Image (cartoon, rainbow over all chains, first blue to last red; front, side, top):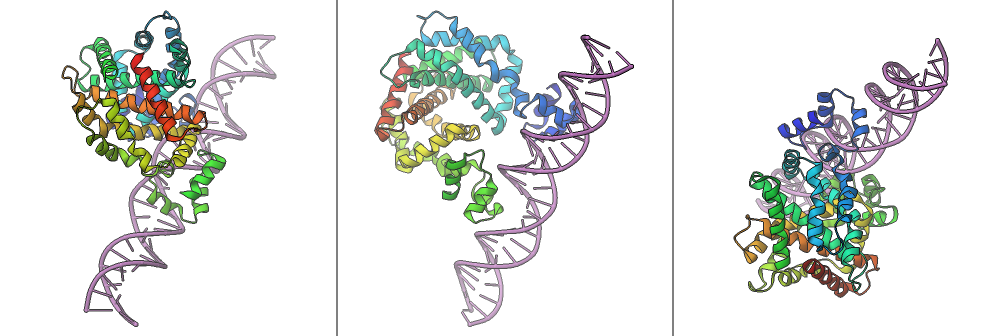
Length: 178
Length: 178
DNA sequence: TGCTAACTTGGCACTCGATGCCAAGGAGGA
DNA sequence: TCCTCCTTGGCATCGAGTGCCAAGTTAGCA
C-alpha cells in the first residue's frame, strides 16, 4: 500500500499501472490481486467495509434523537477509523481520477444499503413506499459530507476535522432551508 | 443500440461482451468503439450530455422561485428527452450491474458540475465557502430523484411519470423535515 | 462521367486490469 | 520425519479500450 500510494501521488492513479506497483512492492502481480480485488482497493482499503461500523454507531444513538444529529454522530466514528492525513490524501486522489471517483461513489452506495433500513425505522412515516425515505436521507447525508469534503480540501484542509464538521452542518442547513 | 439492449436485457449487462454485441449488430469491434466510448455508453447514450439542457431549463425559471421548485421544473425536461419505457429499462439494467451503477453516478456528477454554479448563484448566502451550498443542493436533488426512481421501479413503474414526481417530492419532503 | 479529397470502416497488434489453474515452496503440527 | 495447509508466483486467458494503417465508400467538382 505504501509503495502504491507513493507512486499514485507522484504520477497519478490512472497513469500508474499495477505492474509498476508490484515491481515497487517486490511482489508478484498474482499475489497483488489476491490481497486487493481491484486497483482501487489500494486507495480505499477496508473503508468500503465500514458500513456496519457506522450502522453500529447509529444504533447506539437514542431513538428520539433528531435523525440528522444521529447521523452526524454515527459518521463521527469514521474519524476514529481513518486519520485526517490519509483522508485528505484519498480526497486528493479521488479528485484527480474518474475511476477512483466511481469507486468512491460505489462505496457510498454500499454504506447506504446498510444504513438506510435503520434510518427508515427511525423516521417511519407510513405514507411513503418502503425504503424511499431511508434511502433519500442517507444519500443526502452522504452528498453533504462529500460536498463538505470537497470544499474542505479546496481550502487546503485548514481547521482539521472540526472545520470539516462545520462545513457538513453548513451544507445540510442549506439543503434544509432551500 | 437496439441489438445491444436486447442482449443486455436477456443475458445481463456484465455477462454480455462487446464481441457479442458487435456480432449481433453486424459491425466491427473497432467501429463500435468509435461510436461508443465505453460499453456503458450504449445504455446511457447521450444522457450524460444532458447537463447543459437541464441548466438551460433551470435558467429559464424566475430567480425568486424557491430553489427546489425550480430544480423540479428543470429536471422535468428530462421527461421530454427520454421516454418512460426507455427510462424504466435503464433503471432496471442499472439495478443489476455495478459497472452501470458507477457510470450512472458519474453521469450525475457531470450534471452536478454543470448545475451547481447556477444553484449557488440563486441561493447565495455568503457565509459558506464558494461551491459548497450549490453542490450540496444539487447532489441532494439527484439523490432524491434516484431514491424515488428506485422505489418507483420497485413498485413496477405504476402511475407513470406523475407517480415518479410524487415520490420525488415525498423524498425531498422527508429530507427537509428530517 | 471521371478524378480527387475526405470520411468511414475494419483488421491488427497492443496495453491494462482481472481471473482460473496449477505447481513449487514454506510453516506448523502429529 | 512426514504430512498437511497455506502462501506465492508463473502462465494462460479473457474482456475493455486504443493507436495505426490500409481498403473501401461517399461527396464534391470539373
